[in-house]
Length: 249
Ligand SMILES: Cc1cc2nc3c(=O)[nH]c(=O)nc-3n(C[C@H](O)[C@H](O)[C@H](O)COP(=O)(O)OP(=O)(O)OC[C@H]3O[C@@H](n4cnc5c(N)ncnc54)[C@H](O)[C@@H]3O)c2cc1C
Image (cartoon, rainbow, N blue to C red; front, side, top):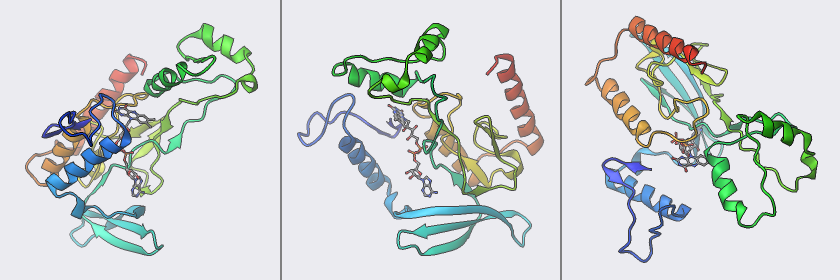
């Protein structure tokens, strides 16, 4: 992790810091706090505030604007109108539940977990979708006989607060249509998504992907960069989907 102009580097010189390659949560939090201080981000963040609804409204200049309803921890709700909305709510809240009895999961998190527990567990079984042999042997094993089971089957894209009148949908865990995974052509540039990974089963980004997406989106919203026409964006998306089909993705 880290930002190109604010890298996450080991602080060997400070005894209060955790210089390990895989540091603890505290070190990550301290880095994020330092980043916020360096760039004055904190005053832009509303803490303890949940966005409960985002929907389109027609404004007098005939451009779509967005109504955003947010709720404070006290329960107080407020409606506000914004020119543009950037959706960056993450994608690890709605779990993809395994189809028992065949437990599946073999991506980054399951490898992390296996490494962590291998030294203390009596046995560790991993069920891989890719290996038919293992899948069969796992399905014949009684799941109830296993003392502990971890489901590392990933998450679903899920945007329950966002109402786009059906323009943006999630179909087979694909959010679309999105030009370069960021802008829905019909609503660009007033709606964008930052942080959607490219691969269907990918947990980690290319390290700087969300940063590049954010800078591109900011350039477009501030009129420094022009997006192609709606038709050209749609054509690009269709070409991308065709490529996925060719590769069976
Ligand atoms: C178990 C696990 C292990 C991982 N390990 C790694 C790793 O080793 N390396 C790596 O690079 N990545 C790892 N990842 C992935 C990494 O955590 C994500 O890619 C990254 O956090 C995504 O950042 P984000 O800002 O898009 O979303 P998030 O970090 O999920 O941030 C989204 C934020 O939006 C807030 N939010 C959501 N909905 C609302 C709402 N309605 N109103 C207000 N706020 C809202 C959430 O509270 C959250 O703070 C891991 C993920 C998991 C689940």
